[in-house]
Image (cartoon, rainbow, N blue to C red; front, side, top):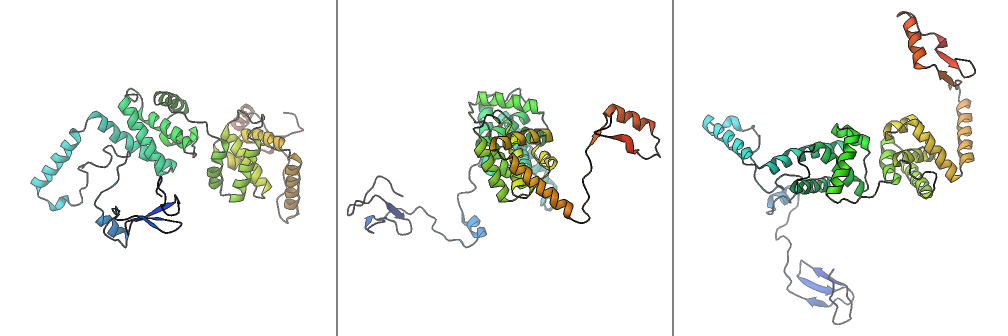
Length: 356
């Protein structure tokens, strides 16, 4: 679309360029406004990806995911064809590869190691290429400013992944980042506060709505549950009941409620394992959400109907009465008194009505 130009015949400002014919024409009356425009397209044609790659003369695009941005030559470690060379040529190749590493400065060596670590974490967390590129750009900026010196490279990279993923709307939890990097949660938080202050990163906190699509996908639920969970979060976002609560816990409770309403009930334990929160957190947020929405009676009715349907199924095991586990101290004493061959007794669990 060409801007700031109008058709001299009808006054229309919507003009388009036809690169194949080199003209600019009016979309309303069809008048040719300019001719003999330079065609910047390729003069060759390709009918497959192999032809397009072989006929391209500009090379690979510049990328921040490589320490040299992908534009310099590096002698690699490929030894597949080395056996065909003479020993003299082979030794010469090894010397060239050694000196190729030696001429790298400290910044390039830092980037060479850190970007390999970044690629590993991005692959583990299944993040898109755009986030990979942005984290690499910010890390190179941090190296140029000298804020990485004296700090753990892995912690800085993990903190940048945490910040950039949140800014792109695909946040990852601290637990997931800790599992991917092997760094403690406290160290990741400390590195994030430091690097955001040094690079002036202003990133809004992640919302529970941003976590829902990925959690729903990991649980194997359909789009109806996802849409219902987002609707629940949207209706309760201004409620004071869930104000200040963790976004992952609210997202887990919303998914649990949506699954119940859509007839795809999931256990709280399954959701807790996927999300990375405790079952107690899900229950507390669940109570807050249904109270804020005013659907306690509806949820209770659905649960009652499900229980009635399950009891009608022939051969379906009936529910056992809730039992209270004795304290760990008493359990350990009982286990010590039991012999190896003796099976656990029935009185290991006590009924609610019985005294411990």
